[in-house]
Image (cartoon, rainbow, N blue to C red; front, side, top):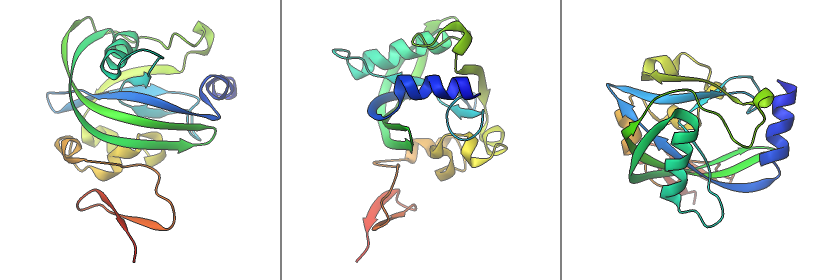
Length: 180
């Protein structure tokens, strides 16, 4: 695990990254990938996605990431919400889009920046909300703490990420509210 964590920090750490992520739901299950080397355990489940490359559009990046990580070709739909992922040395703004599978052959892909020996993508699963809620909160993406169903993901709006102490979140509307 330490080698994976070191490789993640070397490639992605100590800088702000812009990431795109795809919410792909079929038959009341969401497509999820398990990663190692992220967070404080060796398990971190999140939807497929990754960094946007220079001169690559957001939509192109998300389509590329899906093919690389899952083998699936997707059509990108609406922007759902923005999450700020902050677990030093990692810091990313994540743009979450709705996606629909339109082709390809599903298989566990890889992260091209990583060597075969240091791959961080470990497993791919279609998961129900009940499957996701069985994991400790620090082993699944933070978006799931705001959802009691997969359909509720489509109700998430605006900014969901790291909130400074001088602010609080009113989760009934999923909007940030300034304290008086």
